[in-house]
Length: 310
Image 1: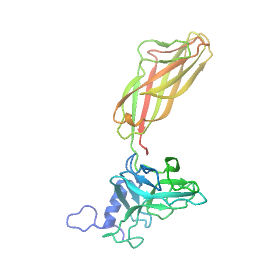
Image 2 (image 1 turned 45 degrees about the horizontal axis):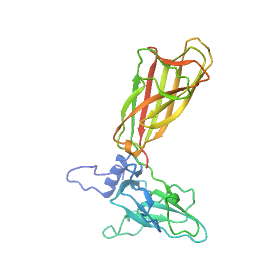
Image 3 (image 1 turned 45 degrees about the vertical axis):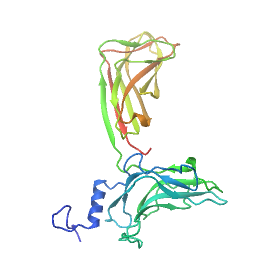
Image 4 (image 1 turned 180 degrees about the horizontal axis):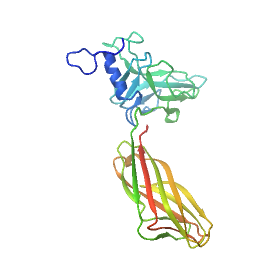
């Protein structure tokens, strides 16, 4: 067979399960993993014991038994309990997998009465394992690293292995152009909001888990004397890493470019809200020079939200 017949969706044609699986593969761009950041998270039981619970959510699983098997979808409504056997005298690592056993390709399950997709435990894997064994149609969602003589699973034993199949990204550039001179002149080793134009109210997507932000100040003015200072960004109440500005050229007016950047993990309550991004300056009390922005300065904020497991 070369070109498969009949393509979706042709009125009057019969469409095989493979045709739909291939559609899932195409729409998911051949990727596999959970659908959204919180899907299928593995946590201890409400009262920790000999098992874990898997949160609700959905996933895409790529078939591994055949090159043209396509991909499957699976979803969990509510929390599912997965038993974990206790250890004996030696520690053990178990891999928790969302698995699909399609009898068209493997095993002998009957779809009319058997569970074709299920949470499986692959015991005694390497403590560095992060993916399913070769040929297994499934996705790893967690690894449980159990100490010796343990029958109770706690949060510290669970390693999250989920990946978002097609993580969303949203990138926007924000700009500001000062029209008059503003100086960071308080030489007191304290943080102060500056420059006033570097302030933007930014909507946070309801799926975002991280923020990658770069603020560039082009045409940053320095004068009055040599200086030593720091610049940092704030998003909402989350503080970013600082950038040093160190210049010893004396009293002459000069210009440079400063870049302040960080990758921030977003608090859950930021999603679906708007937060303010702004800059702060901290000038050393041992140096008297000033930082400044004016009509010769451009400020650019490169803001990118990304999605990942939480």
